[in-house]
Image (cartoon, rainbow, N blue to C red):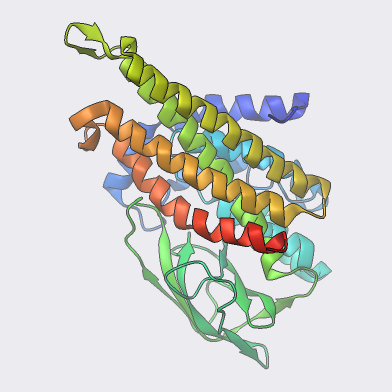
Length: 355
């Protein structure tokens, strides 16, 4: 577990209180039923921006707070607990691409507006049904970008795309000519879109690599996954302490105690891996790629276990829409696949270590 400073503890507690009061799971259910075009609650995002969360990885000179990736992870964990639908993870990763690779004019043009929440930004990387950064066919000729990105989180409303092409990353404005979007209905009821670029004006990001930004996006997803796993455990544990079966509380059955104990230990291991990846990014360590890929492999396996145990231990009602368990397993399924599943990252970890 990471040792938090006073500032990080304050951020974590502030966001937890806000999420519990202003964005509980009931708010996600309401958003899902309303099905806004943006795929998230615009008013809630405005409140988050007013709290300074939109600029959490943006330097102070551009209106951000520069709190770093561990702080971002703490925020995403608390939002993930309640399934709070926001574009924070995607926007932070895209903002980092501008911070690391943008020219002075690109930074001045985009970062202040991202920090205030005015601009939602996202990554447009994958072109097939699964994550595979080695298979990118998008090209740029004379400053015009052409290609199709299959699954773009927050793609329905993003005002800025950081697009992976064969020779690196490019900035494309969401309202630029040649940009078209097609909504994809996914299990988690969030914003996902297929985005096509047909000769769209694009500006190159020179100072970073596609994989470096993917690693940061992956770490952010892992933090949200940690929040889901923690809340799945806590909700299930509370249920076992109140549900009576055969005249006894379910929590008194030793077999169920063993399952919950195993899940608890797996989540603690997951926390260590995820926070280690976030700290590696903040400290600029040379093994960020290994730390991130280990975290995603562990997070994917653990969240799969936690979300399925949540359904199993709730029994039949866990499958109904009246209970929240189904929301967690649906979001888990999407996050497990995003930026590579456990098998992808186990293989990547092996390759990074020379196997």
